Image (cartoon, rainbow, N blue to C red):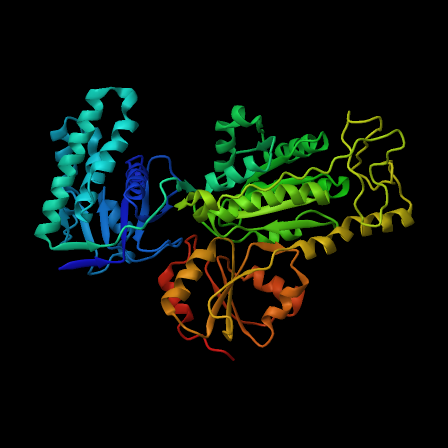
Length: 568
């Protein structure tokens, strides 16, 4: 008897180009249409063809945003999938595979699954993906009606015959799944949720992209580098609809400089890259600092140093963005923990960049960008677009000293003034200077805005008992895994604290840690945010739960890591 109640983890494993992602994409859409909470995450090797990739699809009775190591059902599309995932396969894992795939490996205990034969019976081996989705629906006991509707839309342009053959293939898979579930006594009891029909199923790239469009972005210049490329392609597909100029630059140096030029002219500009690409942009970040030109930099993090693991995940670029560029000047660092928050923070990023004439970094990572979940349409909030451009007069001085430290920002052609920009130190009008007094005032001017940015920093989100003695701190994409781990532990002495703004931090943050035992959870090797908390507020970190293998944290390992946590 194999009974799954409240949740189930289904993993599809195979080679690049074999259809793993196609199967998972179709399944999550069908499950969502049937009213189920779904969360999907993908891991893949840096290869165009071959290798071993896998996608995990979780079906849960409440909304979750985390990866679990446990595999309940594994659909292995090639022999290598089982080898690749062997550390996650347990005695309770049900493995579905073709006989030819695993017979030669002398692996016992799998359920023979003739996906290829059923696809050929439907008319063509190309229908294997459709058969696989139908089979899983049969195993789960979920009606294939929504899948048939999906197929009718998906293949409508290819004619009625193709649609009919796909529906037939889905039925063959579904019947096999139903029979297999009965034969092997597989029961799944997950109650569908009351999900609004207008809830959107999106990935992290789309969330960041929606927020960027809503922010009024009018220019992106980037050199493709995974996983930051997803934002570039998202905006490129929608450039005509939203009047966005898309520039695929020849390298990252050109990308940041093009964005600064566009911003100088009045555009709302962004670049999207990863850590290795951003390393080339650092001189441009200093240029943005001295010229006080607003720009948003999206860094989709992956493991380094150098090329590192190009298609894996990590939170290793906080220090890179915090200290990037020579000299001292202001900046803001944001890191969303959910898709609705990503939409909100991208709008905040552009507004802050414009208001404070500074660089705003948005840190995501491969796990966040490639994950898929549903988002309530009501949770997508559109903020007002705040522009801070003035019409210049003949006496205009781009870098005039003011009480706030913010000079009125003009753009060329809007008014009668001349808008100068100089990468050297300059006076109020923008002319090069080596006057020590002016230099002192300019340095202070560029840093002065940090104090107001601190006061505008949002408070971290707390979840768990309000009087808990142990605070577990996380940032960015670890929001979901920490929330679920604490929920499963159910302890009154443990609470979570998620930061979506990492720098500058609100002055009141330090008081949150008084008389608390502080644990930091980070996907990097040293605990970069823990170091920042220590530097800013003198917070003593009792323990660091760190991971830098290229994998996200699983719910199970966070639960295990926190079992012995106690208030000191």
